[in-house]
Amino acid sequence: MTKSPEVAALEAALDDVLSTVLRETGGGRSTLRIDDLARGWNVNFICAEAVKAGVKSLRGDGSIDQRGAATVKWMVTHKRNLVQPDLTGNPDPAPPPALMSAYAAKAQLLGPLLAKDGHLDGWISVHYVDGTHAITPDEERAMDRARAAVARLTGIGA
Image: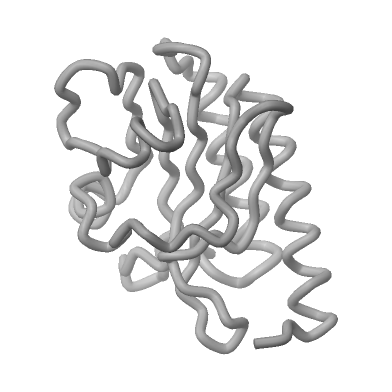
């Protein structure tokens, strides 16, 4: 499916938001997943991404059932950021195994995009690939700013 110029421009603006949160959190990869059929977005495929040099991209990979992941179910229940400073042991909730094996994530920070009725419409992920990472309050605030920026741009998670 070919993207409209408006959706392509929006995705570029969202990539910029993710570049900012990546810089402010010190992560290796940041992704955005949103369910919005009108724009051609489905949470199983990222609609925006920022990666540091040498970090594997997730663009085009729909191999993980995102809504079935325990981490996503946790956000559905708790409706707040999920902070996981160490994915190398037995984190609870457990992220999809491919996140660690194929994409080298060692820690992550997830920020939910919630509709007014509380439905989880999507989320932002920051993956730390250089090792475990003690996620700071400043990094969580950076995630909250990114969530607000995505909501302003898309009307999702507002």
